[in-house]
Length: 140
Image 1 (cartoon, rainbow, N blue to C red):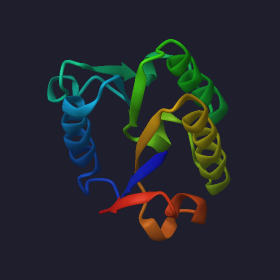
Image 2 (cartoon, rainbow, N blue to C red):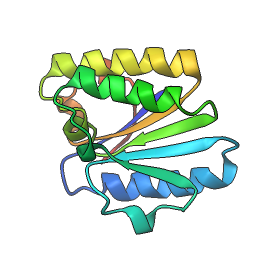
Image 3 (tube, helix red, strand yellow):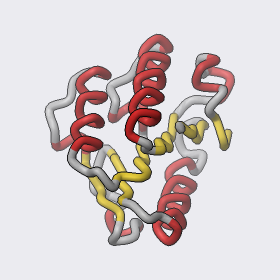
Image 4 (cartoon, helix red, strand yellow):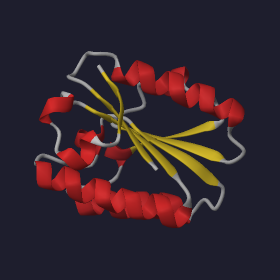
């Protein structure tokens, strides 16, 4: 399952994402991972959440990012949820085609390994492709 929190930069997507991840920790029976573009939110996350700074790794395009996600999933059999803050930035996504491709692949990973993905996307709902619009849970 994929959920998207959409909205322009500065609308409060990260705050919403942090609130969701911290409340999910109490109900989760498995592990939770938070992917971000920096360590900035380390102290805002519950200490049971694993924060990974994606920029620490040599990821240059969407497919490399998806391979990275698969690597994280493969190393944790108890992984339940993965939060992806600044999704377009950390996944090196620029076009609508890349958004569709990434969501399609994340859907496959989610179904096969039973991992829920929650993404924050810095675009208005109207500027997203239809495949992404169907997964929006919050539009800011």
